[in-house]
Amino acid sequence: MLDSNKVKDMLTPEDVVKLCSSLQGYETQLYDNYGNPIFCTSICHGGDSEKLYYFIDSKKFFCFTCNSSYDIFELVRRAKGFETFKEAYRYVVDFFKLKDFFIEDTEE
Image (cartoon, rainbow, N blue to C red; front, side):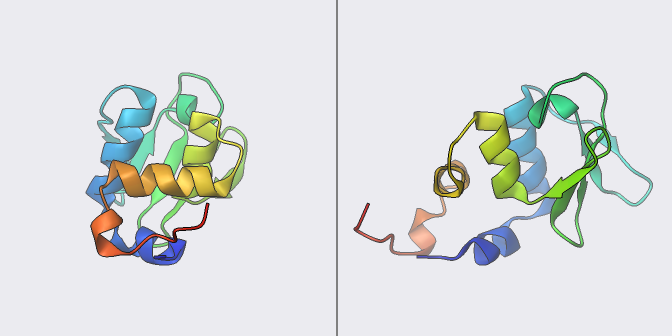
């Protein structure tokens, strides 16, 4: 199985914007002065102000409302209400159709 760090490395900033735009229900139009995308807080915990930043270099999100940092899998887990990391991992892999890049374990 392709590990989660390799999946994160495969994703471009444009991929992250596409996924987050899908999660928040509209395409983001905001970027900070360094070119990092900014998203609505409704993805992670609710609200209507754009305080969720994605930092391209570290591949981490930071929410200035709840003051927490996490990767794309934790963001998806929170946004979709998944119980486990594995569910979020599979969602990201399926969203970007990355199954062709690895052979998935046959065990469930």
